[in-house]
Length: 213
Image (tube, rainbow, N blue to C red; front, side, top):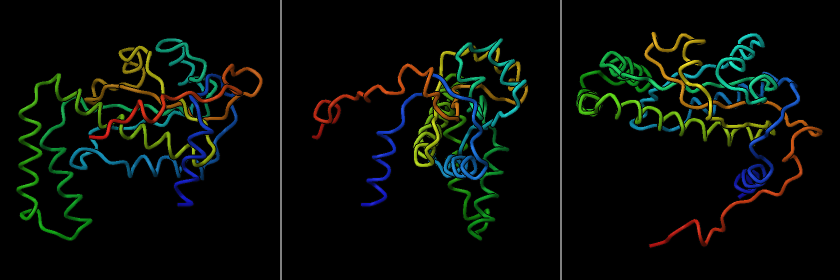
């Protein structure tokens, strides 16, 4: 109950910060947020995405100039780029099977049905369906990161509305089989310039949001 109340309290505290003050997020807090993202659920546990953690001011400035004018890009402590796999391969599946075998001390042979299930799922999807699926998995990780940041009292702003192709060029994602799908700016709210710093949180009422059948 205590953990639940703490989570609800911190979710009440957080909001999509519009202006940040440039203060650095301490490494121990960043590590906890990234650790939570690493543990995020995904379909079949496959995690078909790669996450870039950008701290370099020059890289953030280039992103701001070419891909997004949103001020959080340069004002953040760290910019997290969630890049979905555009074409997950059987090699990716086999690496995942090897990881499971190593971590759970089981044989690859015992994992063959699971391996074949994932392979079939991938092979039955079109290119458009694949990137849609991998992007949705990245968004689950995004949500985990937002909640983890709130628990660490770190502001976290999820962002779309950027030029994905330009960002992919900056980070060299296309040649790595990746596509940027969403960003998460981590930092601390600017108490003087953020227009929402004192605004009341607004959410749809529970009785309207939830439908019990």
